[in-house]
Image 1: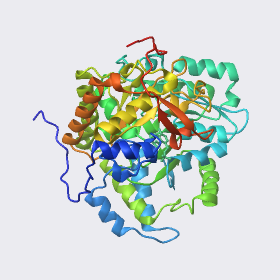
Image 2 (image 1 turned 180 degrees about the horizontal axis):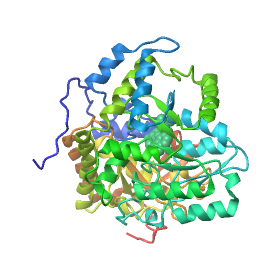
Image 3 (image 1 turned 60 degrees about the vertical axis):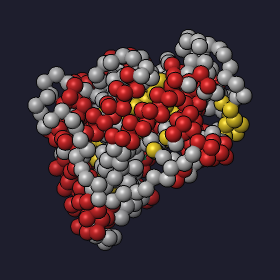
Length: 475
Ligand code: F0G
């Protein structure tokens, strides 16, 4: 059969509250045109994030009942630990409450002033934890990642020669580890090839540097390797996953993505001494090493989630449903980051509404438009998220150095929405695109100095200013 169906039946449903355009207009205004300030009940399709928003399976819910809530040595921990050991090959496994807790512990151990941590593209919490330690986070994506229209199959790859150059320039002693994020969330959800991971490993070996993965979306990355990398088509996804982890010395993971759970994280090490030191820090703020800030039942849900996520019928459906949304948007001319990646479709908002100048936040205008039109909540990843106090100064945290990508991410929660929900999103986006000339820019009326996208308040400009934006297109 050609049709790829959702490989599950629905046993429990959560009603969606429908709303009128007038109602949405009112609550959007009350929220200061910032969708983070909306109540989730006022959202019809929530594509804000794929993190912690997935649906658990009947087996995961059964695990929730089985959870052993003993403080130390709970049977749930041992089930979780052996599942992760078997999947990743890592002996040393620490549970944490989510990805950023793993990052905080890791960079407290290896970061610090004077240190430099390269990555294909750091996720914001990774960057923030590195910078919090006093170290500097550097993004080294391949040049193809700068062009939204370039259909390179592995736009998540790290620029290996730029890595070599960085090591030569700053010296290996200033680099505590090299990190690669699979898939590359900040760079459009794009996968990293095995060939690239092997090349990064070879550079690390030459310079005797540890190599860590930010492996939040390891299964989606492995499936895209199977689909796109020459010679990989007949390999089992589990086998590709294993090779990815075998190439690394450790990993931070947010289980809220490919762990298929609503809360949870992991910290994996090959090095025994580092593992012991991380365990001591874990006890300080997260909890004892056999629960790491979670309940026993959460460990059960993770043990099962990390099993289900490598099922190939699940991954085929997952990757296809994201690709389906991307293809439909492209077919009506909506500019997106191509090719579709693992967990989200990223609309190129600067190309979507070229009549809105970058300082009037075209991405935020598209986000507001999607909400007004159909109650869809997306997230701006551009001048609001990465800009600082002054709307014109964009700090170095931008995913792609040298070019400010102004994106709107439609992140697809796992196992939550059906094809007709996605068709609804396509219809709304098409309608918005056809009326894009009516989209208006915004101005910030209040914002905190950092992480302003969560709480900034905006007002809309009274009419769309007609001018050429930084990408050179005019209406
Ligand atoms: N690394 C990557 C690549 C991520 O995408 C995230 C979270 C984290 C680390 C941190 O994990 O949230 O469990 O602490 N990304 C979410 C998102 C928030 O919406 O993309 P966390």
